Length: 423
Image 1 (spheres, helix red, strand yellow):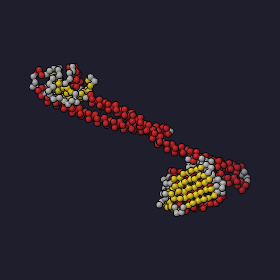
Image 2 (cartoon, one colour; image 1 turned 45 degrees about the horizontal axis):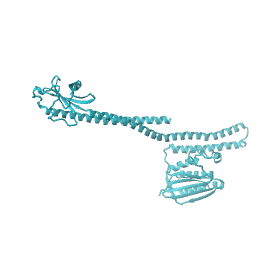
Image 3 (tube, rainbow, N blue to C red; image 1 turned 180 degrees about the horizontal axis):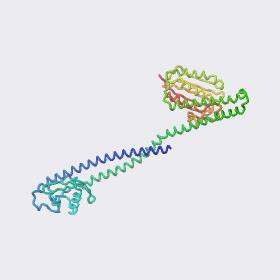
Image 4 (cartoon, rainbow, N blue to C red; image 1 turned 30 degrees about the vertical axis):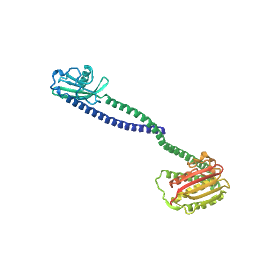
């Protein structure tokens, strides 16, 4: 599916770029063609006017001056510029050649072929190809007949032809380069979508798996109750307790899933206020003091007083409780939990460290993924679903903060939270 999406993106991109290149190249070619055509037309008129001025004696010259079929030897007359390669045919009203004015020594058949090519166009000006050369002509009328001026435009035509070839080569090279560049960026653009899609699939699969176990337990216990329908309720209380326990776990799971869904897809903005983070962390520690005692772990903390932040108090409290609860779950018996809250430059840093097995390098980059637990054998023991740290990271991100983890296996694990200071 994503490969097809990438290919469609590539095709669409190449089509758009190809159309733009065609428009750009066509515009450049048309501008160049018009400039060349205008230059040829101006030069034809210029050559024609020069020939007319240098041959004013055509009307008064004796008949023997019209050397039929021979180039004129009158070289003392003004000639066109050096870059102009041209010749002129003077004809009578019946288009019979009366005089050839040319610096070339060509056969009469060449001049006749040029004249016929010009007359076949049925226009006073035009272009034709003769003996591998391109020529432009203009026909001028005068009282005794016509004057046909020919101009060699082979070089100009070669420029236009080379321009087309250059455009084609450049277009092919550019399309090849653009194809690979577009494919690179298409893969980069589709990668977040694919990752999001894969995470969504994994999220649904994990949620279904997590719901499957408590539902199976509830269903089994209900079957036991139904099979002992004659017993009193108090005699079957343990089965009811199991059902209630699994229902509570499912309730917690669905609440966590609902929270994450609201965070991901809701536009509802949380109410942020200024509050004392030092006081909040101390209250969380006091609230969980009994849990520390029951878990047989030692607690050390160093809280810098009067540290203020701007955010949602309930969310930050939830994130702090998640980090402390996570530390308690994974601290070894008689282990130590160390909590630190300090101001560092323009940030307030909360650190929660605990001794224990730690997190291996292969798992540490996934601890914030939803439903991910490095030690799945402790799932039933800890009662978690692997959503706590994902929720904590979401909360910290909402407050423009950062959360990270460092761990030394079989030694210590530390979670660092950076939040912007309001001062």
